[in-house]
Length: 432
Image 1 (cartoon, rainbow, N blue to C red):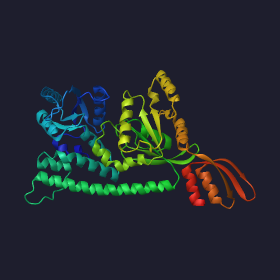
Image 2: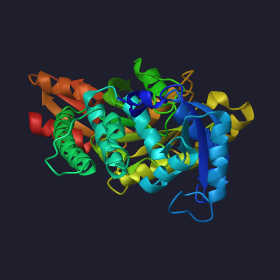
Image 3: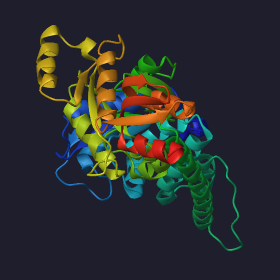
Image 4: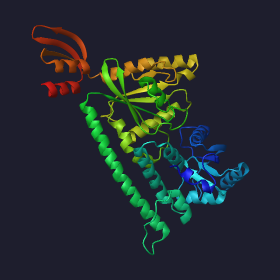
């Protein structure tokens, strides 16, 4: 459950009026306006009404408030003028900075990490997702136990207290949070083991796994639905998808494949979330092919690509042992004909780029062909002579390989079949 939902008695929740402030320290690849637009999208994704946005150039972060004193006064004045209950700082705040800004502006203050955690808290639909979000939220809140007992009680949702005599409320809270986090980690470790067993089972069934990754709102779920005929939630919202979804698809020359839709990435993804969602993100690590979906119409498409690549590197999904990757340049329907032609010329010079419109379906057949080519790039022609009595072996070859030629005599079936080294090893272990 979202912290906002638990705090409506504090005067804010869905529909709360918010002012967004971006501390511009000159280190972002995006413009201040682009950062504010994204932060506003994040806020609106959970029903917050953004009534004003502003950026402040910061030469050196102030330990007490992050912003300079004049900037804090200006922020407080903007909040008061708009009668906003909430201030969102599109950056990271220390607990001390958060507390001092709340005192100076007389409003609830949350930072970018807190905002993203709120979205994940609202969107988690499965038991696993809720476990991951709660662990990330507790990790975030552990250093922020600075308010009164009653406020903490509401913020936690009333987990209860086990403190002994003489223990301060803050100490009791910290111990309670540590105990709860330890329990959640044990439960998530069980999830991780279960996922590992499922992956092992999938490896025994020779179906390759294709993982869709990309920046939030790049169109992964729309593409997933287009390729599978599924009805996964696909809205023009940041983090519309949180829990991973898998469906079976057919590709040219590949009997079956598993397509996996994953959680969207975002710049400055909170470390707590990366850690808590590691079990989910490991699905990307074990994939046979990674399809990176990009919103090529977005002005910050290049920076978004870099952010996704960084998260993939952080979780170990890039490197010498990594699965091959295809870049999907999505939303070409939103480009001018001239811009499309420029991109087509650029994509033609590469073998790892496909232009698509997930909304209209344009280019999805090209993507299916590209996925097939990547998955079968290690396939070689094998010449097999199988006794006609081995019907199961012949059927397996037809189901899992690309049969090029097939001839039969009185005793044997002579096959030329395109198989990967892995599938050929499976065939040998199963049929000798």
